[in-house]
Image (cartoon, rainbow, N blue to C red; front, side):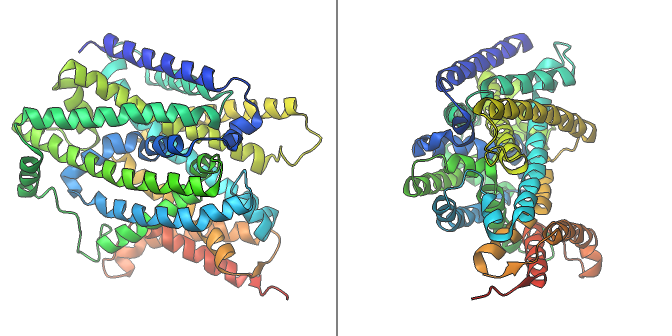
Length: 483
């Protein structure tokens, strides 16, 4: 299919996003940007969060991993399901009770200013690396299958896409993103369903036939029973639960949308409805992955991993399906990138610079600061994507989960210690030092676990270990609260 034609659909889709952004950002202010004036519709937030949670990594990497891990990723999805209940009924009530704009204000109220800025800093590092890894994956697909043929260099593609994201998030922030994420999730799910139906029909399979064929190939195997493996089922489920707590419940981007809903009850409705739909959608992506491998084997196509879905969709399926794939891929790209850029801007402005605490700043000055930070973070995104291009790792989803284990662990430990104990921590930089020491220890443990522990490999439980080390460190430097 003509790369120019595909690119014209990309351009048309972006124009549609700009129109939505213009409509929703009128009369917006800093509260609109940061928390959507606490007036977001919970159903829109729930539906839009599906796109944010899945991203281009799920769209491309999860189907690609079926060839190596079968349906093993569903172990992590089961953990996600458990984790969302913890977020909905433990963390959300806390955030609403304290009326937070930044969730890291809780750490300030509980432990002081250093803990507050430490939590925010770890979020900024984690979300920057995670978002740019997702961004790289999708940009790389667009580059390989469309823009290389148009002789557009990778750096220019990255620059243009980041400029697009800047244009439609610059004014409205969360208020705009709630609507654009809804639009983007719709296109992403449409592309997923159409691809599943078309490939099933081309193979002359019903749903039942497909499941039998996948079972015969061993693709439907979910549970890994090798206790020493990093993919052992209990590690994956527990790890998935705590990854959800960390990457959703302790993440300003995800919680920024939830606390933009009018009240706690509606926010919990949002979280639970989103949870059930997310489990179903993840299963569909695994099902699609199995179908893609069956299709590749029937057509003697020797492609696997992250390249499988893009190659088949753009080279072996009809033009209409190819167009839907590209729109679905972009729809998976934008929710993870635009939300991250907005949340990072909010966190840096509120948590690090303290523009809401500084009463001497005028609304105009706050707006100027926010816009400067927004542009600066877009430049940092550009640099990080270019770094990922040089690494050129084939399994981006593994990178993201690994980064989450190191960076969300201290946040998990800080919040757990604050919620589960009433102890007071020593003031100064002790909290920061412990939050840095825990990931360093985890890195050493992860590197030498097989050697030290009789072949045992650390998997997704890395996040839990990291959080526990942070918790123990805080326990050591704390004392009982005086009556």
